[in-house]
Length: 116
View 1 (cartoon, rainbow, N blue to C red):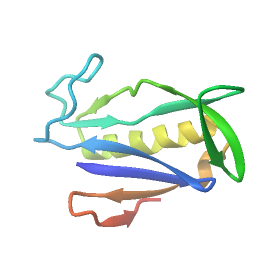
View 2 (tube, rainbow, N blue to C red):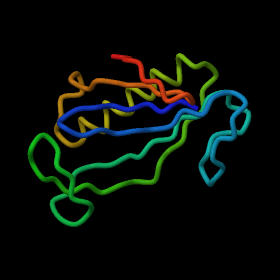
View 3 (cartoon, helix red, strand yellow):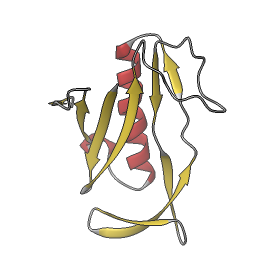
View 4 (spheres, rainbow, N blue to C red):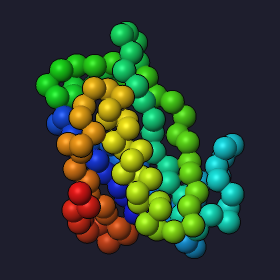
């Protein structure tokens, strides 16, 4: 399992990449269990009221969350590229420049590496 974390605007978003041979979550909408790599991460967007208050880029915003949409991939490279794009998209949805997102990846040994 890999933990993929995107950092921008003074906050972060973390998703999980389940690798070949690991038990990915099984729930409605989950990819076929034969997928070699499964990416799961929250999806959210800014709302004018309600939701969860989060401080992003020194301002308070209200976030509404959508159900995570797991995605299956054949290769690790495809899965990591999707993970990065997914995280960039979530930050863009709340008004942050997606090109400023920095990435960290943690594996089972909790070692982080830069993945910019």
